[in-house]
Image (cartoon, rainbow, N blue to C red):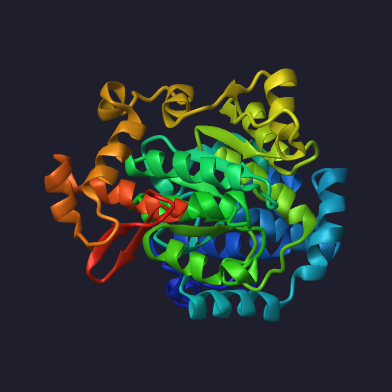
Amino acid sequence: MTWWNPSADEARERLAPLGVGGDDAAVTEAFARTVWSCLTEPGDGVAGALVAALGASVALHHAVMSATSRTAPVSSDVASGVRRWMPRLEPRSIDDAITCAARAGVSLVVPDDAAWPRRIDDLGAHAPIALWVRGRRDVLAHAGAAVAMVGARAATSYGERVAVDLAGELASGGLPIVSGAAYGIDGAAHRAALHAGGGTIAVVAGGADRPYPAGHADLLDRIAESGAIVAESPCGTTPTKWRFLQRNRLIAALTDATVVVQAGWRSGSLNTAGHAAALGRGVGAVPGPITSAASAGCHRLLREFDATCITSADDVRELIGAAPMPTQALTGRTDDTTRVRDALSARAWRDTTTIATACGMDPARVAAILALMHLEGSAERDVAGWRLTPRGR
């Protein structure tokens, strides 16, 4: 036994703080995947193919032996991989990753776990070797549909408003929203999903323990409470341009469709859409003013890549083959919002139950609409309840 190939009992003890258990073979394999996660960059197809062919533990042993010239590598690609992997094979880096994860409450999810999201297996050799998850790991294995919502960091008020409306409606209807926690469209989508009481997953380019961007530290904490923050790289890893690009393929793979809400001509969101199309997932784009450079990427998707035009939450549901919301089939969200607005006062504070009774709606539905109105600035909240803002009048 060596430090990178410990006994099953030692591996179990070291990984226990990360939520890893199981029989001896499962724990040994999970430890090997932990090491591989520290050795490779996200999406390393050579490492992925080697692990898929031999298993993580045997593949790691083969790589180390190849590096010490005790065995010949199985191919020139593996020989090249060994040269880039082995400089990272340091006991301290592996120990630090495990220690940082345990300190931050981050767990390790591997393919043998019930929490492993089977959708990402469609990435083949480029699928993650392991996932580091802060928050509820069970949300990753959500059996139903999920939607990725991405777009420009420098979003306009129009883009953020559309992201709020779409994400809030979809999340309140039970569809988890997956995005990248960036400023602009990503942040608006995550916040709307949380306000609507729905599920949301943030896929990050660095370690799950590192809030990035720093201005979204509070948002990421809220996401971790009811959803999940997911990373391929181990804790302590710094985001880089390459890791952002690889993160995009994971956002696409975790979902049934990717909706680009607002994007410039060369936006990284188009990269996510490209991964979704390559995986056979749905791709949608929200149109914007033809004079707006902020929507040029969306118009490019619609014109050149046959993306579906998205103008409502029901368009997204149709894109993934889900049934429209029954209430929307009859009245539409706008009418429901009007009913809630009519039940609000501009002067007196009213609680959710009183508002629901006044407009004759389900309190849960009213709460979701109030959350959206709060995000768009047409309603305000206090300990006494809700009331209209000047904008809402």
